[in-house]
Length: 507
Ligand code: C2E
Ligand code: CA
Ligand code: CA
Image 1 (cartoon, rainbow, N blue to C red):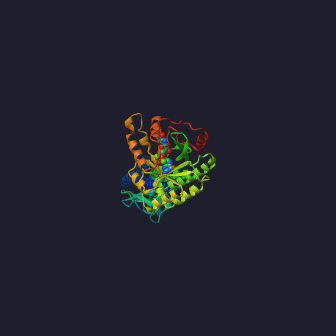
Image 2: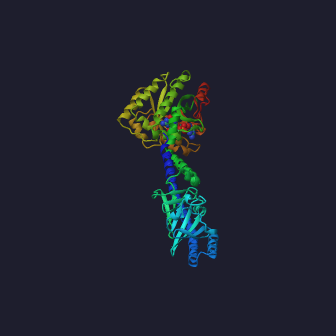
Image 3: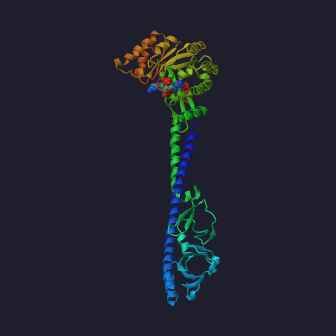
C-alpha cells in the first residue's frame, strides 16, 4: 500500500495549526483595534465635554453679573460658537433662570424632575425634539448650570471605520450607541470591553471580537490561508514522495507480476561448432506499458529484496511451460531450457515442490530442464539445500553453476553440490581476442572445469575470435550476441523453424 495516510494527516495538521495561529493573531489585532477605537471615542467625547465645561464657566460669569439681555446674548453666543453644544440653561430653585435660547426657553421637558449629576444621558421622551441628549451639569452659587450636547455629535464620536465593533456611551445606567439606540444598562456586560474616561464620569463600551470567526479569517486572512494551503500541500507531496520512495518500485513490481508484465525472453544456447540450437536460457523482461522492456538488472534485485522473486519466478515457470508446450513438436530432443533461480528462493522449503510441479507441466518429458544457480550471491549450503538439489537432480533436472569464476564459493559449490554444467562468465570470454596472452585466465578456468569433468557453457560470445577459441578448446555449448540476443517467444519460433546460420568451423 502506498503511504497516503501520513502525508494527508500531516497536511491537515499543518493547515489547522496555521489557521489556529492566524486566527489568534487576527483576534488579538481585532482586540487591539477595538480598544484603540474606544480610546479614540473617549478622547473625542472628552473634547466635547471640555467645550461644555468652558460653556459652564461662561455661565458662572453670567450668574455673577445677572441674566439681563447682555447676559442672555453672551450665553447664546457661547452655545452657538462651541461646535458641539446645543443649549446652556441656568436653573434657580429648579426653574429656568437664564437660557442660551431666545426668550429663556428650554428644550428639556420635566426639567424639575431631572436629577443632578455631573453627566446625565436623558431619553428622547425628556426632550422637545424627541432625541436623547447628553447633559453636563454643575452648581454655582445656588444656581444649577445645564449644558446639553446633541446626540448626533456623540454618535459621530462613537462611529469608527471598524465594521464589526459597536461603541456605546455609558453614563450611569444608560447607554447611547452609534446608531442612536438608547438603552438601560443594569449590570456590567461580561462580553463587553470598556474604556473609561479619566476626566468625566462615563465610559465607552464596545463588543469584544469573537475568539474564532470564519468571516474574519476570510476577510483578513484569505491570502495567508491560500499560502497555508499551498504550504501544507507541498509538505504532503514531499512527505508522500519521501515515504513512498522505497515502497513505490516494489509496489509497481508486485502489480506488474499480477498483470503478467514480467515475461520470458529466450537466449538460444548453440553448439558452437555446428551452429545447431541446443537449448535456451530464460531471461526475465518487464514489458512496461510506458517504459518498454526493462532489464532484469533493474528489477531482479528489488524482487530479491522484497521476496517478490518467488511469485516472479513462479509466473515465469508457468509462462515458459505454456510456451514450450505450444511448440513442443518443434523442439529438438534433449533441448535445454535453463531458468535462473535466486539464492533466497532456492533456500525456501517450497522450492522442491515448485520445481516438481514445473517439470510436470511440460508435455515433452525428454526436455533438459536446467536450474541455473549463480555463484555471485552467497548460497547457504546446508544439509537441506544439498538434499533438495540432489533430489531435483535425481528427478531429472540439470544443475548449472552460473557466472562461474566471479564468486568465491564456486569451488566449494562444486564440491558440495551435484553440478551438471558450469557457465563460464562472460567477463572471461570477453577478454579473448587475437592476442595470445588474452586467453590466459580463461585457459586456467577451462582447465579447472575440465579437470572436474563437468560440461561447460560459454556465455557472452560476441566475436569470431572468441568462437574460434572456444571451438579449439572443445567448448560445445555457447551463448552470446554472436549467435543470438535474448528474443521474445515469437522470434524464438522463427529461429526454431529456420536453418542453422553458423557454419562448421574447421581449425
Ligand atoms: P545471467 O544469468 O548471467 O544472464 C546472462 C546475461 O548476459 C543476460 O543479461 C544476457 O542478455 C546477457 N548476454 C547474453 N549474451 C551476451 C553477450 O554476448 N554480450 C553481452 N554483453 N551480454 C550478453 P540479462 O538478460 O540482462 O540478465 C541479467 C541477469 O539478470 C542475468 O544474468 C541473471 O543473473 C538475472 N536474471 C535474468 N532473468 C532472471 C530470472 O528470471 N530470475 C533470476 N533470479 N535472475 C534473472
Ligand atoms: Ca543465467
Ligand atoms: Ca551468467
